[in-house]
Length: 217
Image (cartoon, rainbow, N blue to C red):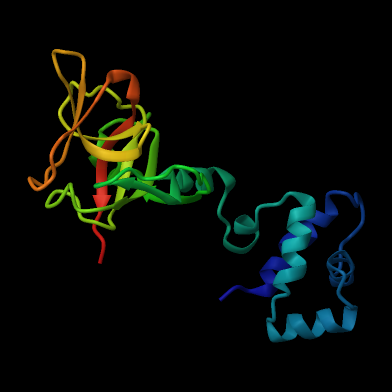
């Protein structure tokens, strides 16, 4: 439980920085927070922390809330934050494991993955990961319909074995990709019920390589 009295003493230290040679009292803290003095005294007695007012105060003064409440230094927060890898998750984009998928909506949200998980997938620190859904069954049993796949945009060399996201004139596909000696490109499914798609090199652009996935429930 947060001790409001301890927080008040920290707030006094902050306020005193602009009030040289003047002792800071509870009434000064109450004034800074915009709380009536009598109300503030009651809150202190009951250890009732006025979070809304304190958060607004910290935002105005550019003070770390974590430091104020939990003694967490900014450097510590940065170190902890850096343990996570930020990934753009395109909730409305589908890579087709069947017919072509449309790529018209690029709304996304940010999700965080532990850096150890990212490292286990790509083994490098400069990966540019994005997450999208799979529609269709052509990559089963390797990848299931409805799964989420993680795509590294830094890996586009199809001469290395793997599964890739390919952008074509027919839409977005998730396939194994092979360039033939005649210059044509094959999009190959793992599901043997699907025949390879054959396109000219100019019709295919490699978005990135699939480096991990989360199966649908």
